[in-house]
Length: 322
Length: 288
Image 1: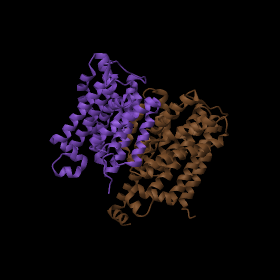
Image 2 (image 1 turned 120 degrees about the horizontal axis):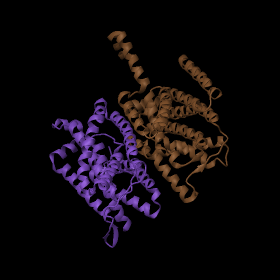
Image 3 (image 1 turned 180 degrees about the vertical axis):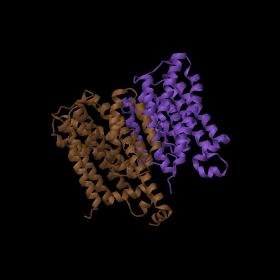
């Protein structure tokens, strides 16, 4: 495999960064560790979300559904199966859900996909409630494990590394190339022989199963799991707003949004618990209007503009010719 | 029979919700995910007018309809117009409007949660039995259906019998060609968006007379409206009416024969059937 030098450097830097971050639980406990867990959680979910929604421009509002499915995979089987097996079940459940949604909608125009994902978390939540009230007895399920915040943090950090490596591999593969063509012009993609529906469905399954695993890992933190908590629509909302802030053109773009936003959200939800939805709604609108390409997209545009004015109009035409 | 008629009565209100959304999406090209929040807001305003000031919900329509028209006009002018100007093509506008209205959804929901809290609300209005063909129904449901039918017919007459309405339909078919025959596309789109919001709000007022509502149910109603619009075919009024009645009856049948907790599942089942067999809508033609 022929890997460019700067990508090897980025890979090395990323792994070194992850190794340093893994030391966090040894330095601190309590507040900063729980913030760390939140940051890692959203880093996984937002990067996985952007893996699909970035290149395809199809806004998935189904993150809460995947998260909840993963959480319930753990909640249902925690007493009978070991945790690693539960992670596999979460992957399988996320993939199956993504395939169902994908097969129903991704062969058609993108609008159907967005609509379908809008109510999906609510739908699964209602079905779970229905099953539990009619067959299960109680509404909630207990999850008791020996996991501490430190374990959750390490697992989510490892998952973040896996998401990044997967994203990097996808970008280098034929699948990634196909998706970039689809995102730019679907008609062109079809004409050069890309199976557009298949490419989208595969990527949606990858993205969805990662979010399901994140949900599975978080299940021990809640200890008592109800449909309302597991399928909270706020999850879908957060997973859209953070990558939007960071930008989705680069693999690490969402991360730029995740870190500050998680810190701000913690501040807001502890100081203004009742106004959280209002504040986040306004922040969301501000991002859509002011930073449509996110912080990284904006920086890139500024950088390019500056370089092209420095080199004068000739450089610009040369670039266009190229 | 009881189920069919109950479903039909419910379908009347659903028709209005869907007509509101189809005006916003079909004409103004704005996929409004906050549509359900307009509906819920209207429910609360009606509740407040009736229990606080003693204003009859049917008279309340005269306040809420125009009020929602103005509010939605402002939303379009301030929030949607910049997106329309920024968008290079229809796909981009679709993505931007989905994101913006998704933000609005949470903003409105948060505002209503602040004011009204998360409890369920309802009030008693015309809660008397009314007999149709040997079955008795709540009079409020019957009145809501009749009012919905009147509004729907008025909208139909407006769209198909007046110049302004013809202009709205022309923009729905092709905004560029509409400009060639001297239609102010921007104004017409704003008008259609505002009218759609007003009709959705009227649906909310009627719904509140017989339905228990709370601040977080907006998404479910947006879902229903979207499913009806897709089922009927975007911009197709006859299709939307038929689809709304089908959805109302299916929902009632599932709720009374199986379980009321499965109505959303019934909606999704219909949606999947439509996507599999007629993604172009009931009366739509297959694209060549």
